[in-house]
Image 1 (cartoon, rainbow, N blue to C red):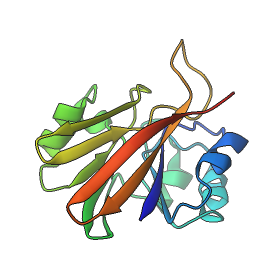
Image 2: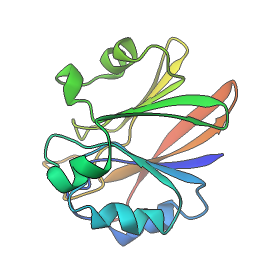
Image 3: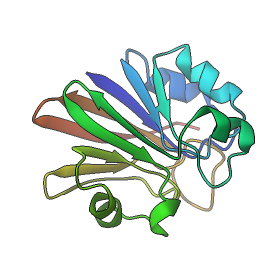
Image 4: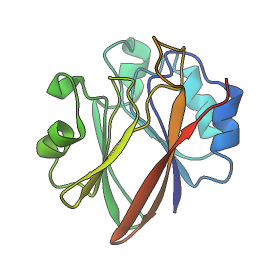
Length: 157
């Protein structure tokens, strides 16, 4: 199963995200969405599992949970913004959600794909407005039981 992973859009859904997510079966959004309409736009591509982040308003918070747990292609996935663990790192989110096979988080705007023990931790970085010198990125994951992988995709913006 091919999964698109995005975070920290902050109301900006770039056309390059749609290009990167062509052919995905599911989309995971790790919060700081912006207007709820952004989720509707993503849902036109594939089903979306999203969480709210610290900058999201009540409309988004009323539509999606703070922490989402979903099983995709036999893989136990946890999606969280990351503010729950302070400054999130792969180690801190895996420690907080050790029962997952894949933990997706955002908040720091720093893209990373790292295996911590048996758990894959993915922060797709920020796909929204550029912040400092951070790259504008998303991630793509391939999920199947016992074999989960992900890679970062830098958007040409």
